[in-house]
Length: 182
Image (spheres, rainbow, N blue to C red):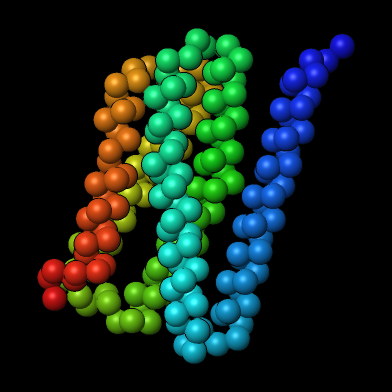
């Protein structure tokens, strides 16, 4: 006989994953539609979708290491640990990976269209985004390690790492808004 709580959790997880997938498909279709129409006339719409993708990506980048803090405290194999594994995997695959991909694709298009590749502030911003993407990769590896019960880092480590995306976000926003290097 199966555990009713487990079945409810699986069903609600499937519903949440389906809703997230629908939202991503709608965003991708909308983005494709924008490009099909004529991207040069829809620059601000593309910029809006880019910012939406960045917000989703950053939400995940700020939340995932917080999950790691709690997961590192959970007993391996416990119900709590297994719940964190599901949460981390879904956050990464359903929100963070697609959001990062959309942010990169549209961001590069916006930079090309806006002629920013020659700007020093853009080079600094691009470097910060590359570092943020590397942190994303590190978080992806950590999700795999937690899933395999191979995390060897204490909660304190994840608390400190939790600040890295925040610092990078601050740098990136200042570079985009202020453009300190001309």
